[in-house]
Amino acid sequence: MLLTTKFLRPASDPRAVRRERLSTLLVPGHPKRLNLVIAPAGFGKTTLVSQWCARTTGPIAWLSLDEHDDEPQRFWQYVAGAFEHAGLTGLEGCYKSLAGNTDDHLNSAITALINTLASDGGPWALVLDDFQFAANDQIQRQFGYFVDYLPAGITVTLVSRTEPPLPLARWRVRRWLQEIHPALLAFSEDECREFFHSTMGLTISEQEVQAICHRTEGWVAAMQLSALSGSNSGLDQDQRTSGSDTPQASLSIDERHISDYVLSEVLDKQPSAIVDFLLDTACCPRLCASMCNTIRNTDDSQEKLETLLSQNLFLIPLDTHNEWFRYHDLFRDALLQRIRHVDPERAHLLWHRTAEWLLDHGQVQEAITQIVQKQDWPWLADVLATHGNNLIHGGYHLPVLAWIEALPTEQIDESAQLQMLRVWSRFFANRFDHLEPLLTNVEDLLDRRVADSAPDAEGALGLQSEISLIRSYLARSRSDDKSASDLTRQVLADIDHTRIPLKSVTYYGLGLDDYGKGDLTGAEDALKSAVHYGQVERKPTTVLSSGGLLAWIQYNRGDMDLALETCTEVRRWVDQHYSDPSQPRLISCCSTPLSPKFTGNVINYRMQPLTLHLCWSM
Image (cartoon, rainbow, N blue to C red):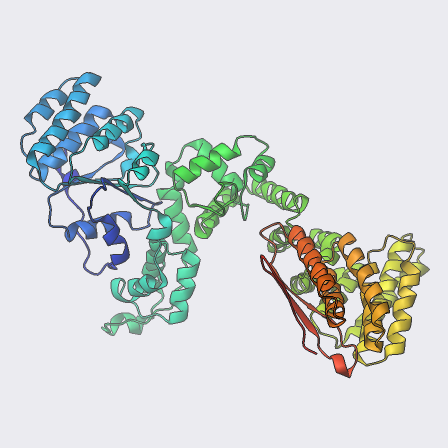
């Protein structure tokens, strides 16, 4: 006996958001045979299809599947029963074949069902909700045969949390398939606004709508849980009892309820191997197979990632090669809560391995973000000491300044290197005020270390040279050209036979001095050296600034071809340096004033496929 309530289509809520942009995709049309609506739990799949059915005039057979339907004979009995419940007649031959227990009997039953639909000639629609429960390989093969031989005018709609192993590629080529995936199902900002105002009957501010839409990424279940929480607890007693038709509420994402939903509706229904992978990789801000293999100490992560992708487990691709992914933020938060609760020591170990992998693979900014979130200040200080200069000269002076200021004061006070990083960050941010007292603090600390017989002589020399170099730029800002030139040349003499990575910025300073004096030949030679050492020292801001001024000199001298060659070389090097797509493609470099004639020169270099644009304010 079949359970007839499985043939009942869920009633369409008149208050639900009307999603015309998606409903039109489900409309039958030649040569389409199959609608595939795939998304994780809570994305409104069933609601969307139910709304479409309510507006469709043709006969519709609806079947809601469950975990008991993953058996071929039972599955096809229910499919035939759905058609009969919707009014299809002539199914006696199909039922007769379904009474047998062999594969031949099942194949005969499917053929009889197809023949009955062809004889009826009506524009039938079949909706199978929760199709992920029909995971049996035999069912999938038989269903592929069923779709292949459907008569014209029949449209099947599959609603599933996972992509079924059907011959979808072949059906795409034949234009039989219409797919609606999570990116399409996610609510737009306008739909979020209508959901809160019309469906949930809440009046919330535009800022709250935008914030919740952004945080949930259009996941309607998360929005609904937040709305219900706000309507139950976000209103004071007067608002609840005043009888107002438009209650005022202040909403925020209800992390606890969303976490409970994710754990009960998603995580607890997965195989243990998938659960372990999800929990182990929740600490990763982005995921790739290499990272996951390293932190899990396994070699099967690519296979696991592709499984998650096929099952739509809140995994979002970040490229077209199935190499980089990320979890939906709220899904990741729920996973993190679970692993921190059940195994806090492993959660900390996995986090530490993730940050180490990011550092080892040059993704320093993401690693630091993880370290800051954990407030591991000693590790942050070590990482900044190692990578801070490269980050600053790569255009990340403002983040470096923020990270340094997040450190405990005593940690900065005891580190001349960190104090110097703070100086450079403020310098690149054009915050010249109070730099002199900061430089004096660094000098005092270096003097104390010399008194204490600190062994790092080259390190101390490097910091002293950095101090002199900063003071040379400050002298230029005061139009004290002689002091600026003397300091710069002294720095160059001090570091000439060392490996201290300051030659690029020092030669750039010499180039500025010569350019300010009108010695264009001397400026050109110094700037060529600045470009060369900037490439050696991996300082893109110096390469760009030096190359820009060098090309400007060559251009104004009339050497158009040489200026173009300089621009092309600089552009090529920067393209190679920033081959990682996570790196910025727009860099702003600021040179300190040369004289009143050259105050606030800003050079913006936007790397385009064909041109390097140099924009100067003279």
